[in-house]
Image 1 (cartoon, one colour):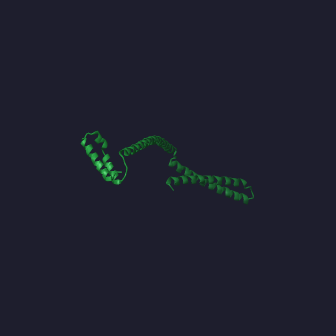
Image 2 (cartoon, rainbow, N blue to C red):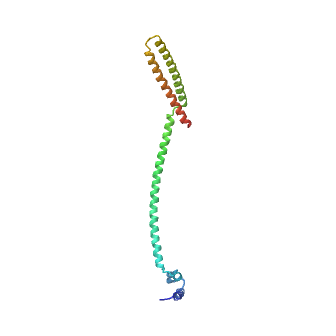
Image 3 (tube, one colour):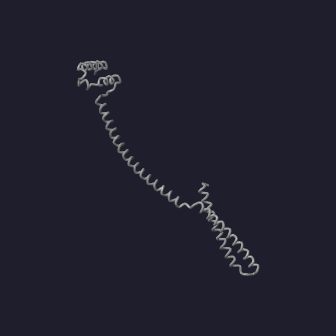
Length: 182
């Protein structure tokens, strides 16, 4: 078995032989880095070779190439997905614009809402007045001992009308609160 000193001496002899072949030596090109690696092996007590390093580098390069190919495919798939989603977003934006335009076209003008409120208010007041008259007539008929059934029916009818007009006003009030964000 050789000693580390003997191996160092062998490296120096090989270096002189390679240097003696000249700058453009094929052997010199092939030996590039080999002697430095041999020194590292001696110093660190390891067993690395240029061949093993090259094999590892090729394995890593193959792995990187495969990963690169996989990533390129993934990028292409993602581009297609982005294009599809972009088209979907565009379609949804168009639908949203159309829906907004339709909503605006179907929006009831504020003046009409005010007029409806006033009409409901007036009709409610009219129904209350008719309820009061029917109640008075019912009372008078009862006192006079007459049939008050017709007056009771009129009172009931006017009370239903009043409730209907109140409901319309409440709905208009709710609409106004929603529009005002309350």
